[in-house]
Length: 67
Image 1 (tube, rainbow, N blue to C red):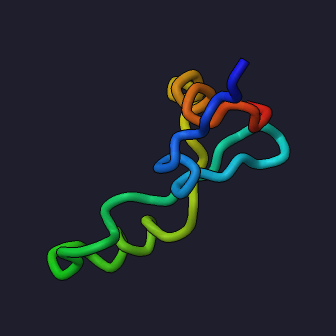
Image 2 (tube, rainbow, N blue to C red):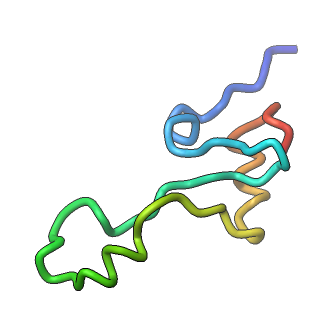
């Protein structure tokens, strides 16, 4: 049997943490930042985890990662 391939876009955008959760970057902080408030941009810092409802699709995109 051939090996299952990982989606190359998901491989670049997500990291699997040791506990099995998936880390992702925040959206809406790339461009058009002048109209966003400083407080809004402050809350968009850092990384967050993928929601539980999306974990099924994450396990299909990242097979063999222990999700």
